Image (cartoon, rainbow, N blue to C red):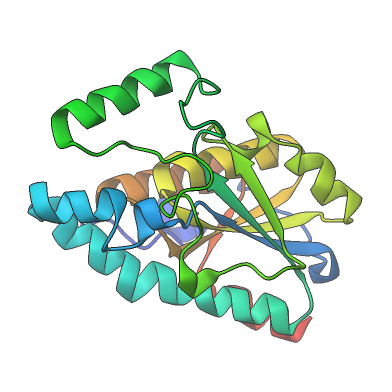
Length: 239
């Protein structure tokens, strides 16, 4: 929906009468969290992205360029910036931990089965498969946290909160896929647990632009802040 204003400041929602989320950021206690940028969803030659290109080209015509030209390059810039600043980086990977998927809730198992029936492609791949791995362009280093989750929010099926608090993290910069699913859900849960949360708008992607914008506008009104990659890197550099 190109008629919507950019999601970057309260001025774009002047009719909103409630206070905007505000917090002080100590960048020495900030971490980058890259959510589910795995081969199954972010590699154009594999998994869901490949299936969309073959079966739903109208959706792929938006989604694949959004990934390859915007979200992935900006996620790379964030990763380089946080590494150069010697700040913490964490990755999440989404999918069943068991090959038969029985560790996931029944609704997710049914959804996977329905997807195979209609598209010959599951929605998720289990740990240990190529599709489950983080894409090569964002490959984690040995000293970076990788957390495997079988829920949309990383805070519902892992110990990520405990791990981040052990590392002294107060602020999370969140990027990834999909904006209106795992990115938004993880970011909201982090905010509810007391973390300061910034979503990197141009380092995130989902299948429809209107859903991307709706997710970010809802998050920005109540839970946290939405910044551009440039704004994040500039603030990090100044710190």
